Length: 287
Ligand code: GLU
Image: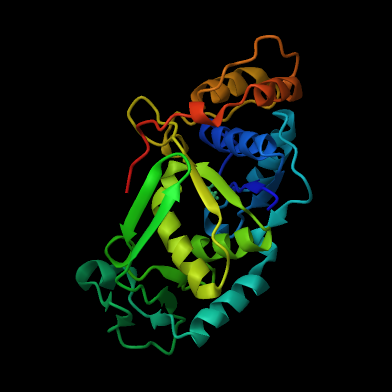
């Protein structure tokens, strides 16, 4: 099967080092396999969106030599597809409405084991949660090795559609990975514990499960994820080589010394790319 990889940033800020690592790592894996590399803008969560950051990220990537094969898929334009998947989950009786308020939830945990004991409130929309079964989901991560998670214990009855009518990242991600024909998901280890939820949704929706490769996370000196850190300085598209060198080094790859520009550096890195050198580094929690 033809390899199709992707990079799927959220527009919650400028491109920073952690996301550059995911972009370069997914690009190298795709090109090394002779495959395609696709882009998806995960602009599905307007409350969290930072104005202008989607365009800024899309403008920065080519400056780092990262050019996608084909147009960008924007999640903000995919609500019909998410609604269809949601309707399918409803038809399967795999979701239930939940009127727990955040505070009610914190106080007493009113939804459990596939049902919500809060009284329906006709004046407001419910959230919709998945009836998460008590099952183990196992998969072999290409880099991190065998993974296993009890879905109910770790994810609980997770949200599929939020109170505001927005679809969750988990649902949108599986619908779009299938729509884009992704065969291998290469992304940061912060999403390792989302993968069993996504595999479960794929099975419910009759979608294929891609291979998964979770890259180590870049952490700051205090051990915090860069995107959450005050020191998450954006990488500079006007001066791409220093950040590209750091990203290649972080991915365990030899850093080309003679490249004149970003495309040249990526091309040289690709010639010497050895997936076996990618580190299973700490900072990546193992589930
Ligand atoms: N949009 C997610 C993020 O920026 C990545 C989603 C994914 O790669 O599955 O963290």
